Every structure is written in C-alpha cells, then in structure tokens.
Amino acid sequence: MIPRYARPEMVAIWEPEQRYAIWLEIETLAAEAMAELGMIPAGVPRAVRARGGFNVARIDEIEREVKHDVIAFLTSVAEHVGDEARFLHLGMTSSDVLDTCLAVQLQRASDILLKDMDRVLAALKKRAIEHKRTPTIGRSHGIHAEPTTFGLKLAGFHAEFARGKKRLEAAREEISTCAISGAVGTFANIDPRIEEMVAAKLGLAVEPVSTQVIPRDRHAAFFAALGVIASSIERLATEIRHLQRTEVLEAEEFFSEGQKGSSAMPHKRNPVLTENLTGLARLVRSAVVPAMENVALWHERDISHSSVERGIGPDATIHLDFALNRLAGVIENLLVYPDNMLANLNRLGGLHNSQRVLLALVEAGASREDAYRMVQRNAMKVWRDANRKDGDFLANLEGDADVAKLLSKTELGAMFDLEYHFKGVDVIFDRVFGVA
Image (cartoon, rainbow, N blue to C red; front, side, top):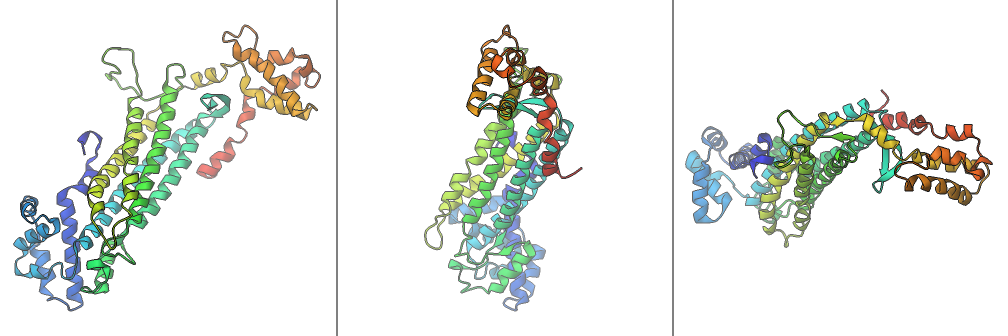
C-alpha cells in the first residue's frame, strides 16, 4: 500500500509485527485453555506469557527454508520460549491461527471504518440542516426537472450512508468468528472447548462448521459491504464534481491559500479530491469479485484464497478508511453558492413549473393529452430560445387562448410559487434525522 492513500491506524492492523502478535495471542490463549482443561502443564502458558516473542526478520529467514509461514513463526517463538514451546499449536492446524487472526484484523478494521462513517454522517447532517431550504434545481438525465433543496440532496446521501453503516455493522458481526478445530475441522485432535474459550477471550463467535477454514461466504459479504460503501462515496463525489463544473458552479471543493489547480493555467480550481475519491472507490470495489470467487474452495480447504486475501484485506480497508476521511473533509469544507443555485433554477424561465400547470389544467377540465400539448407547446418556445426573446413560460401560458379558457392569470401565477415545491421538506427531514 502506498503511503499517499493510507492512514497510520489502519495500516498498523496489517503490519507483519501486528499480525504475528495476534498469532502469538491465539496460540497463547489456546495453551491457556489446554492448561485449564488439564491437557498440558500449567507452566506452559505462563512461560509463553513471560518469554513469548518472535523476530520478524528471523521468521522471514526460516520461511525461506521451510516455505511455510506458520511453521516459521512457531520456530521463532520456540527460540524465545524454550522447551515449553513444544506444547504450542497442539492439535491445531495453520488455518486455526490464520483464519482466526484474519477475523480479528477485519473486526479491528471495521471498528475504524465505523468511526469513519460516523464522521461522514455527522458532516452530512450538519450541512443538510444548514441548507435545508436552500433552493436548487433537481435534475433527471442531467436536465432541469423540478426544484428541490440542497439540504434534501445531502439528506438523501445521509440516509444512504446510514444504510451503509448498518451493512458494515452486519458484516463485522458475520466476519467475527473463530476456528480452532484442527485438520479438516473435525476436532479429532483438539477439544471443542478450547475453541469456545479462545473465541470468548477474543470477542469472537464460534464458527459452527469450519472444515479447517472459516467459510469464505462470510468474507465475500464483508468485502461486498465495503464495495457498496465505496459506490456511495463515488455517487456523492460525482454529484460534487458535476456541481463544480464551470457552467454550473453551485458548489465546489474548498480551495486553500496557496493551492494550485493547474501547472499550465493559473485560473483553474479543479475537483481533485472528489476525482480522487472516484478512483479510490474503484479500487475498493476491485476486491469484491475476488472475494466472491474465494468462496468456492476445494473440498474442506485449499489456499487459493490466501494470496487474494493478503492483498484485498489491507488494500480495501486502507483505501476505504482514507476515502471516508477524505470525503468527510470535502463535505465539512464544501463551498456552497445559493445565489448560483437560484440563478440556475430560474435559467429556463419557469419551466420547472410545467407539471403543476399540467395538473391544474387537468383539474380544470382538460384531458391529460390536451393539457400536455398546451403546456408543452408553450414550454418549447422557451426551451428553444436561449436568449429568452420569446418571453418566459408564464407569459407564454397567459397568451395562449386555450389555456386562458381554463385558467385565469391569477390562477396561473399561483402555479409559479417556489415554496410550493418545498412543502414536503420537513417530512423528509423527520424521516432521515428524526423530529427535531
């Protein structure tokens, strides 16, 4: 993982030193359980607690010879512990250590990501409330539709990230299982009570059927949850990028003193952070398909999943951690331009009221087909006239004889009240944030 897109707390979870420390804790807890059950001398776990250790460089050296990372690790630990180390790993298999360790790492990574989600949610809530009634044009297909508020846009993203947080909480629970069941998971050479005792000490659930490895559907669900969160990041980043376009300029990333937007053009203020977030989202999602493909292992186990998880475990969690914090910063410091929003909303001479006029004509007695034709022919005059020389939408409607038979000027004018579009704002905010 390159340092540019990494934060130290998440990186530390995946460092070799930390991984081996978790391995040692798993082996020690298993030894303590065995001693408590009278299976090995009581002095063994005490010796491991007192003298247990390892040397990363030494493990690498041994692994180059034995071609097995867990054996290399146990050999290094034995060099620190002494004769008592012969009781370590008794009846266990490598996956008991590797899979249980991965569960711990993913659990810890989840805790960081959940805190990140809380920061994003707090930023979205604050800015949504700030702009609860800031008018802006809603767009469908990229084309002006009807008015909304900038706060409603952000409230929608808050609801989406709240769902993402729930999925991550569920994924954390699903991934938090322990397997200490021995070769092919039958407990032939290790007591099931040891697994239960180790799991309890690590804050994990017992894997019901481990078949020597923890089933990879759990991991697939975990990385899928990360992928959905990444897609939500990209959706919000894309919205900001569109709003920052020169022709729109309704919002933009904060541009700090001394910041440069282009090596060639000094006037540029580019949406580099949200563009970066779009790229990071792609990287996080790139872990999803390999995690799905890891589910189909041969028989009770193979290690085709191992190399994949050594990559996607650190990469996906580190990238997502960085992206969530970058996104939170973008939202917290986002520059919002209400005047530009209102100017863009009015740019089409009131066409955003077309549906309301259509409904009023229908209620006044016109068929929907006739009402649609009346509204559309007056709307298209405005649409085709970029300089508005042909008047605005309201003026066109007032001058249409067919419309005038059904609606007075006073009635038509009432159709152009901007506040009409915002009568449901409080309902939506109560649904998202609760009643204030």
